[in-house]
Image 1 (cartoon, rainbow, N blue to C red):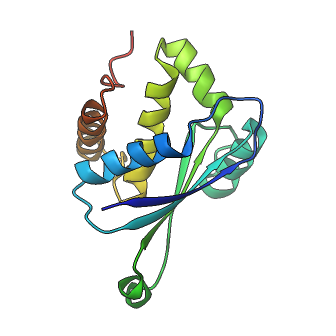
Image 2 (image 1 turned 120 degrees about the horizontal axis):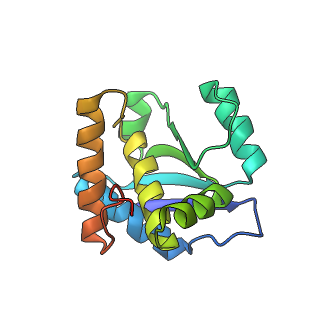
Length: 157
């Protein structure tokens, strides 16, 4: 399995991970989720104002957020005919990621990896809308990050 990633950067004044880092993190998440198809994912890095506008438009929350996921909605017949399964779009706001990492005392790359994997699991259909669903998703995130050499993101110091 392999994730083909198309990255769009719309914010220049924040650190963003390199293409190969994003690929490694998403491939690690796909392996943890036991997703064996070749997948394509669009990743977009945006300013705080864009994050806020998207969060308001699609979730009815008028505030910026760290990560948004938009699963692809292709007809099943079309998906079966593609060599590379389109998972959807992950939108990450580097400004929010930096603020959270500093506030929570986390290494910036570790927080980025967590949010990238969190967004991926949403594309794969995982949610955190109930305690049991949240526990399942968090356990997968912890396992994926551990395999990549990152600490448990839910242990905030």
